[in-house]
Amino acid sequence: MRHPGTGRRRGEPTGSPLDRRGEPRWPPILLSVSLAILAVLSAGCSGRNVPAEKDPYYLRGMRLEQEGKHEKATAAFERCLRRNPECAKAHLQLGILYEDMLNDAVSAMYHYDRYLQQVTQGDDADMVRRWRQRTETAYYERLRETLAPATVAEDPKPALDSPTESDQERQLVESVRQLQTEIQQLRQQLAQPASTADARPVAVAAKPTSPPPEQPETPPSGERYYTVKSGDTLSEVSRQVYGTSKHWALLRDANRDVLNGSDRLKPGMQIRIPSLKSSTEPKG
Image (tube, rainbow, N blue to C red; front, side, top):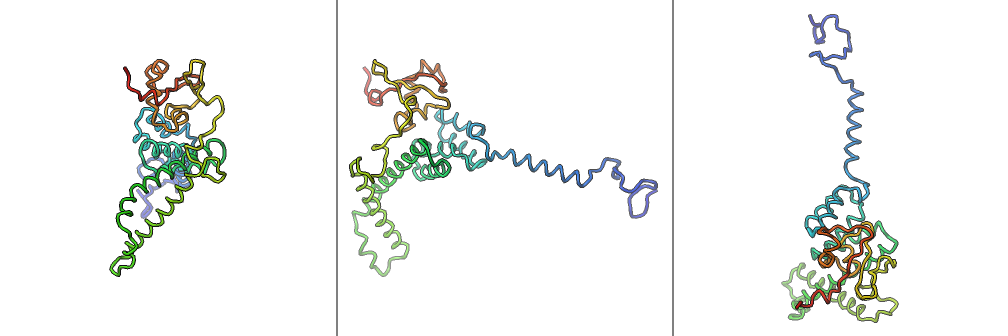
């Protein structure tokens, strides 16, 4: 028999640990603690504040970049940043990919800026600032070449006085004029001698300074070599010695006997640094 309105059997004590089906009940406090633990564990799996060297998406991006799969590498680094938006190394790798491989100067400058927000001092920061400046200079130069035919063919000044011209057209013309002024100023700065004190650093006039062990070694035979450090990749070595990571395949082809069919570098390796001139000369 059950007590009316209670659902309990006669003789069953109040607060029994069994439910109506005879199964154990979860006390409310125990259930709350379990949910709290699950929430903490879920937050820990988000990847936030995890070092880049331990983030699986960052490591995947580095591997794909080394294999020449640049778009997939970009997707992996962006996935890393969704888990950990403050991963400076992922921002740096994306900046390099967008500048060298994907021809997206705006995205490259964005990721270089995000890197420099976190790494403000040191040789790496100075080097990235030069890369960022080089990207900006090339971007403005491309804009100048793109807009020059349209602006030279027709003087937009009379159109400003036209009563039928829309506000949007006026704003566009004003933007073009402002951009032309900025380009002219930039060309004047680039035309100044490299010794000028206030000249802006560009990649041609200023190259990153690296410690002696990081520079390619030149033995008596005249052939240059580079000693691999921990964490080096073919793309990174190419960027150090050529100024761009585009020539990583040239390094791979020149060192097939050392790499033994792999693209991975090991600390202490001595790899040859071929000259770009000799690599473009016809053979035979």
